Image 1 (cartoon, helix red, strand yellow):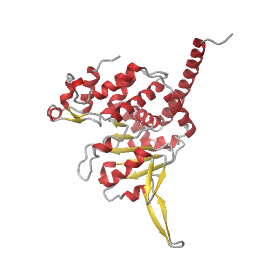
Image 2: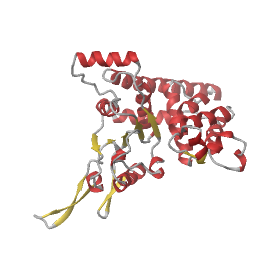
Image 3: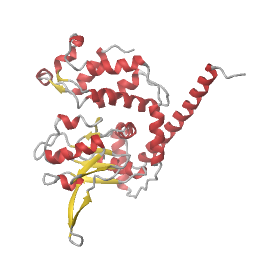
Image 4: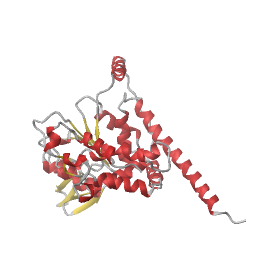
Length: 337
């Protein structure tokens, strides 16, 4: 007897459920391994994993001493990926980042010497300490996954993942990232202070120093499989419309004139926000063990996707409102499907 369409559909859903469960298990293994070295900071760890699996770059913002650099280095140890840390300083040059042409006296030729950007995971430490010409050297690599040295363009090996850190309270000797470059980051994560209990655990670890070696738990083939599973996650048209509505509600258009939060926004989010929210919502669905996206997934990722894409008005400044406050207003105003 020929197999009915319903039986086929049930079989496909069961296979997808199994794949999602396996993906959730792989992601959970990475989380557990990182917990052996990092105390707390679960939102930061989840945000880094989300950015990597969604194929985007992440900006970490927090005061010094909150384990931003340690977490990124630990993530590189857990993954089967090459890692380079670049300390951004005012005297850094673009050639120090991407490489340059070097004259070889033996052959009389100029040959490329590749810079530290040629790695899977790049940590741009204190990115706002380097001048604009160095910051802009990252743009081609981040967007096109390639760099140009001399007359030749070189494709960067996948996965390629830029993690940048910056200190929000230090202004002297820094160069704020321009809006165009901020838009290249898929997520901006706020790194908060640990809780009292977490700080006590940190103190105990320092009191008994020991070298915690992390095991590689995720390989490049696994990353490819995870991205395939994430791409297959179901997203209903109503959820798609909800994402589009959230992003377009940040723009002063005739359709959204009644939204109160608009008076706090000078310039709204770009279409990149729509694309990135779509990708991140799918990743969160898999992290939660689901093969479909629900509105809570969109709400969970919206602040990290939107907070660095909104340019606030003088009214927001006068009322001491942050971009996160405005995003919360939008989430409470835009109807949920």
